[in-house]
Image 1 (tube, one colour):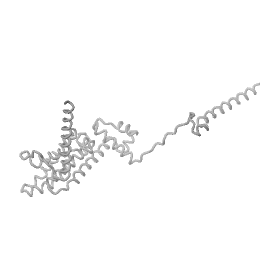
Image 2: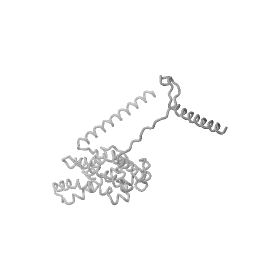
Image 3: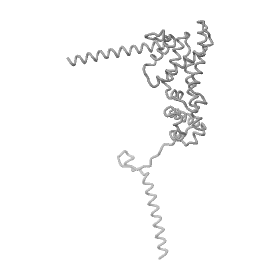
Length: 282
């Protein structure tokens, strides 16, 4: 009787095992009707796509881009390593591994932005006439403000790290150095003391940079109009300002013609709208 009870229990256990196995298999079983295209319900196990691991270089670039965006939006002090890591989907030690901390990440971001702006301004100085060079420098900085607005916000915002690793003032000094030789040559040609070329280059570049900082938020008037008025003041001075300043470079000419075409079209549209309104009221 006892043996029979044990056999019955063993058989019951095996039966339960077979039932469980069958249930597991049934989850993956696809009926023939479903395979043939009929709309029977099919239970299947979804397969999640494999996660793609980043290389060290890719992860570093990702962290730089995330840090750049957060620093521009919130500033250095308000941005934390935790937030940077969370947005990248990594742990804090990964940020420390690549940059040694928030300060190191910020320093790399600032250095990159400074080199980008300096390269843009330096490469733009190709014209022969000093006024053309001034236009080109103005356009280069306004291009940077427009196309790299996050980077520009970072450069003009004060922070503890910026004071030690480079800031907007030091960047302006670097750009002014590129202009200094041009100013000294023009001073010498006009009979002025060339030693003041360095000071005047700081004045000119500083004026362009601060105007760019204002235009970043104002976004009005258009870029070519801002450049034209900056050159007007820098070249002619307050006593000789042109009422309708014009740009000399080919780029400035094209921009002015495009703006005039837009203004003419807007005026024509306004006339047509007024005529249509008058006809409807009549």
